[in-house]
Length: 317
Image 1 (cartoon, rainbow, N blue to C red):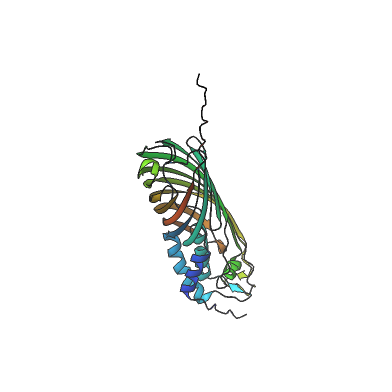
Image 2 (image 1 turned 90 degrees about the vertical axis):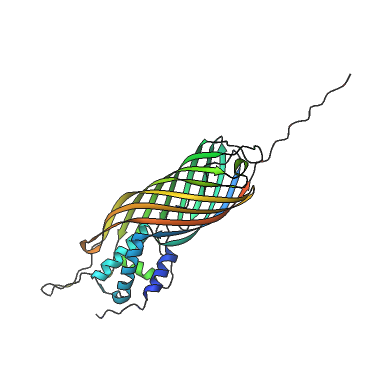
């Protein structure tokens, strides 16, 4: 059976990868000061994830896909298909992506707050404890100085390509399924601009995360490449696996505004060794690299209502 070529150019494939990708929440648009009790913060961020390993794999895999991959009922497993398989895995682990993020935070009590955020297809809950600096809101205190906090975040996602330029058909070619869970621990310090970060702050810190990966590749029409003694080609066997890896990062962040409305600008960098992953046809792929995560966003503060002190009354004699 004749194999037809797909009419995708490399640029379209790269665009499709970027738009359809999602990654774990990694933007650091926060400070060392957690929310005081009862205070609410909501906001929206934009994050770009740029990873060296997916860039290398995507260019190679995209060109190979444009030259050899097929929409026909039968696809022969070649080196080009193997490269494309590696490109998919690289993007799932740490994609080049442009995502918007919505978040909510609430001050639980003295020096503790919690939050939720949704980044593309990833969800995350976190808590933070402030161990350094004042923990009052800017309406109650005129203190400034340095703040420090440490947090813990749990995030999860199911990887899926969107139907952009029929690129979902390429995912169906491999029958790729993946889930990912991350535990992230950020250590954050900040220098206040004005009392209690009334007009913003400068933040910096370190980030450690550990990721858990489960994946399965179940091709429905990819067959072995060579015929031996006229034996019919065989459908490639499914591949599944589990993996985990560490990531180490650092970041800087600037927040400017006044009391109720702030603008954030952040730049984070991570290094990770993703490890080795079995692929179709008995091959495997070893991935490691650096991720750069620039982010910007806007946030709104809602302060708790202050209780009015009762007016004492008395009788004059």
